[in-house]
Image 1: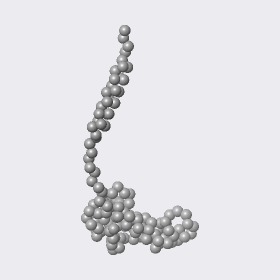
Image 2 (image 1 turned 180 degrees about the vertical axis):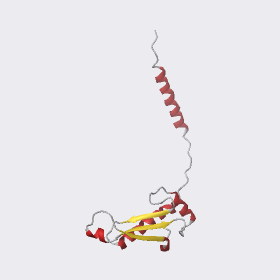
Image 3 (image 1 turned 90 degrees about the vertical axis):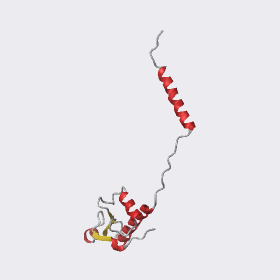
Image 4 (image 1 turned 30 degrees about the vertical axis):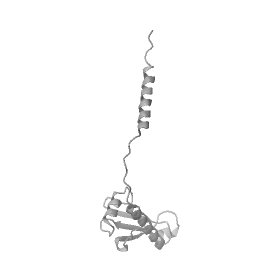
Length: 131
């Protein structure tokens, strides 16, 4: 598990969306977390895999943006955002296993050719009938 340096994280408090009555309109309880991958203290391999992720939270500039508004308190939302960022970094830290190319077995090749020959014979019997 890779530890994220809190100095690499930029916080912005925003008002949460959705239902919640007056509290939603008055209090900035939601949190925007911004984490710049390029300037972070992560290992280079993890940075590279994070940038290659097809995730909507990673911008084209290489900044991870996490919006947390699940809870009513800003502190809980901040913890939630950090946990979600940590999950993303942990997923990028796992080295994917290299795929070993496989060949079809001789039996599967034979079955394929036999089915093609059989299908061809069916098609040849569809011709015009002559006396």
